[in-house]
Image (cartoon, helix red, strand yellow):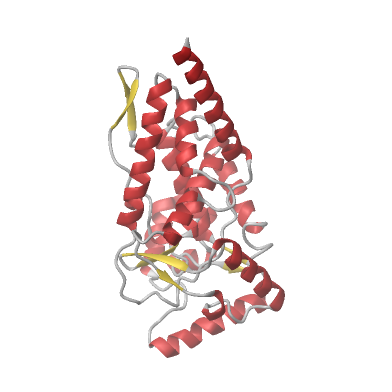
Length: 312
């Protein structure tokens, strides 16, 4: 009886934690600068993040197996406790603060946004104070803001839950995702619509589908049920999800007003002169052709107009 009571208590506690993570607003991430530190020599930051995520997944699975027999809801509860947190994502914070993760950083006042209109400048400064700003992970020649990891897990989970079991409403969900960048997560507050954020949201949907209830065709599951216990099939690797569309220097942003855009592009032009390198987006235009073909009919909801225009 005591064991059953403990299991009920753990299930109730986990369900409450999941409810908070699932139904609070998605993460409110700060913006990043994919230009200023692009060509700095820095180690690949992905391995350190991969190790942390795999440890968190293992803990979630162990806790699930202690109290349930391959129950997906319980699995989601305990994985959520390890990977989800609204407003400032757990993995985003880990990437920002851990010495295990190689990264570069630019302060907002030194960034490509340093000359934007005053009201937007003040709002971006608040974002820097709350969530940090300009921390970038380097993956080969790609530069990826740590805010993308919050989008991947938190908003990816949010929109995964909106998907039908066969993902037949994918375009509808992608439009919902885009609306967040047109609203408080993007243009309304920060003045930036990040298509790289939208790609991270989309790939996060795939992750949650692969580890929970499979909603997309051709997925590679992480777990299987064996003897009424979850068993690992493969480890997590961000390289299975990251491509050039995560890089705002390739998958170009849109901005709130023409004035806002002019100030950003002008600052980037100054960087080009200072560094003696091409930096105007898309920095690697050939990637845009690959991305347009890779994502086909859904590319307008994931790839920015400048990048798509370059692809054709």
